[in-house]
Amino acid sequence: MSYGQAAALQAAVFQHLTTLPVLAGIPVVDAVPKGQGAGTFVLIGTEEVRDLSDASGSGAEHRFAVSVISEAAGFTAAKDMAVAISDALNNAALTLGRGRLVGLWFQRATARRRDDGRVRRIDMTFRARVED
Image (cartoon, rainbow, N blue to C red; front, side):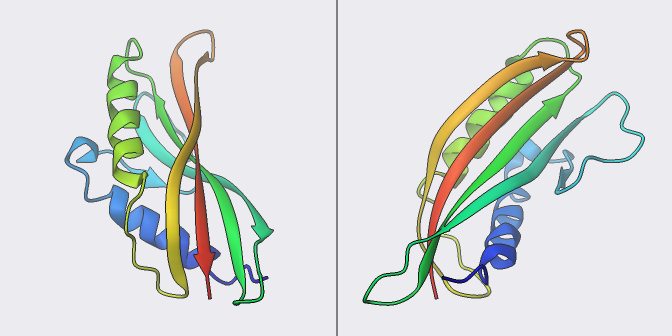
C-alpha cells in the first residue's frame, strides 16, 4: 500500500471543484479560514486511507470529506452547492499527478446547524479507489 496518491487526489478534487459554476466566488480550502466571519466556503477535509493492494498491484481506498459551510440563512443555498459538488465528484474521471483514479463515488452526507443555528454545515463523504 502507498499513501503516495493522497496529495495528487486532493489536488485533482480541488481543481475539479474550482471549475464548478455554482462555486464561482466561493473559496475552496483545506483549512478553515482564520477570522472567518459571515460567509460561505467549501472545505476539503479529513481523510482515511486503507490498503487495497492485491496480486495485480498496489492500491488504496481513500475516504475523504468535502464540506459546505455557510452562514447564509436557511439550508437551501448550502444544499444547492452540496448537490452540485456531489454530482460533479460522483463517478468523476479525474487525472491524478501520481497514480491512477479507478473510481470515485459519493458515500454519505450529514447536514446540521452549528453555533446556535447561525451556521449550516453539510459534510459529504466520498470514496476513491486509486492504484499506482
